[in-house]
Length: 120
Image (cartoon, rainbow, N blue to C red; front, side, top):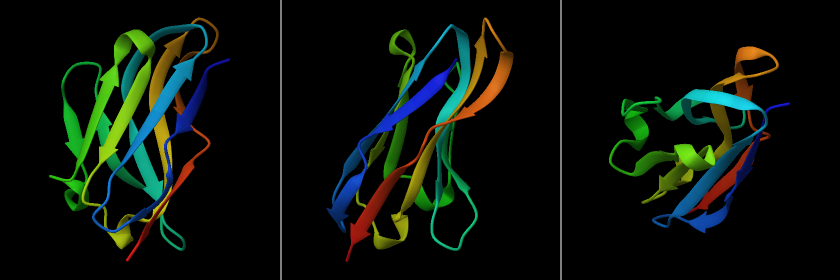
């Protein structure tokens, strides 16, 4: 069974930084896209940043220049470095991965979510 486990959320003042991690485990053959979405109260879940198995990266316009997504393929882990955080970045952040495994084939997986709160 493939699982995504997130860590690194918390409370930070505006202008501060946080780094999120997402580790995938299970009988993984390959990880295609891997990245982060977020959902603020009363809002829909939105893409934050996503990185392909190659080097293609997409960011939401609202985080460009402040956030950086990366991945360590050997560790099946993705990271989201968040700098210059703003109160509007407050949300639950979800890790996402498109994974092929030996049991279920190619599927989309989500982490449990980690709260990021930015105080003004």
